[in-house]
Length: 431
Image 1 (cartoon, helix red, strand yellow):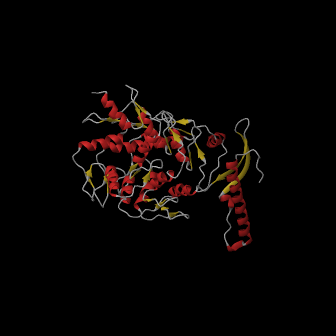
Image 2: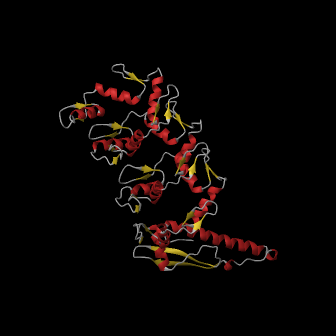
Image 3: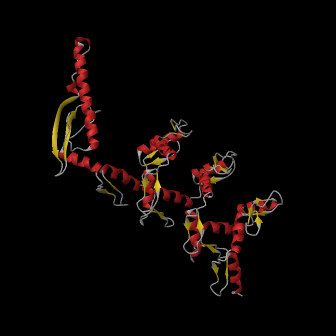
């Protein structure tokens, strides 16, 4: 069969496959006829009635030659050479997305896709799991969910021991064994191995946040992020640890917590002996072996290996402190700092030192205290020989060897390398 050279490459494959099937049918019919009366003759015309090659002019520059097959069997593929049908088909190969959602701006090439999307704006979830009460708007999502109630994980990774109940999860998992990140953001340097992650990332460059919380006004780019946020307004914590009384609103938090009861630390650093129970902790640790601090503060020169740390640091240069203690008026830039501060107003101090009986309301303070019971002071200053148990103390000490004093009093000319020293000094102007 000779096809017009001007043809859609994707459609050409399908046409050639159908033609090969037709030829196979004819060969089979000839073989059956040779057997004569041994096997009843199968008339191929009951499956394929006619074969016509037609030329359809879609537009002035695109001419396509289609194999027109009228299929009688409903299980077969039907190819329609109607001009309007062909135009609708060519939209699939085009970047045009004429069907737009009026609620959030979502656009698609097919009207059927838009109808499915519109379900996401509906509160009705008609498909319900009879086992756990899970509900969804789509039947296929319910089918995927039902697999979670099965212990069988038929899809296994050939590279590692990972196995899953969902084929799509296996495909995503296989990407972690590849170093190639082919999906790159055109706006920033973000790159990923998964196309869906790139789509989610691209939303962050938009100022529109269509998903808003009706309780507190919180808004976000993603519906999933809004669902997670809504949990903070709910006092119910359905995920409970069977070993202790820990409970949480998120299943992922419970999984991480369960690891604290295990002595196994499967994630090991290749550069040192560090090991951990959490893969994310290992990633953070690996960064510490890099000498390059690529994220630098333009205001004071502070540098770090992690963008998250730089973002936290930048807050200290802002005069706005939105998180305020209702008891004493203490204010801070960071919500976690306020939580720690609130513990100082509580008489409960659950963290106790087993060696000397010291107790505190903060777990990190207890860890720092425990170091005082060790004779070895591993953090050593190379300039003067000062040693300490605590890495942060060494960093503070190193500032004494620097001529840079970034913390300056706005009232007088006093400057210092330590923020706490500046706070003490400011009290002298309040007397």
